[in-house]
Length: 183
Image: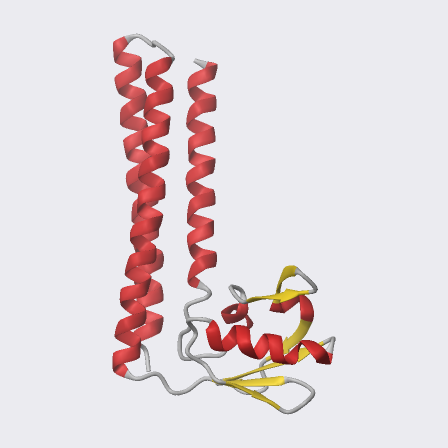
């Protein structure tokens, strides 16, 4: 029975980690407001090492629709500009010699709908992760060779846990989509 509880706790922890990863990934999808989190996915090749922009610069939000990136090493400005241009953010960096200004354009209805679709794909990936963890948990329970009633009860518990985590993902997605569609 201790093995069963360990398997359930371990599976729940993996599901929670998967949800936390999904929430972190959602911070890279921009809403109408500027946020330093938009730069989380951008890295540059800095002296042969892929390095996140956040580690190479200070990032500030001077206005609601602007991000200002001030690299600690001015020689990295061109690299950061290139990485931003190559990213899926769809932003054009403006350099002033000391730093880079990103101005977030007003989001069009079309762009908002594209982002909602992107969030939908991210949501489905997160749900697949949860279902894969459920499958692994079910396999582990079956290997324990428990009495039939205990095994069925454990599998039911796993399904209830899975349903609750998928529901949580759907709630997170709904909130993000509301943020995206709010003008």
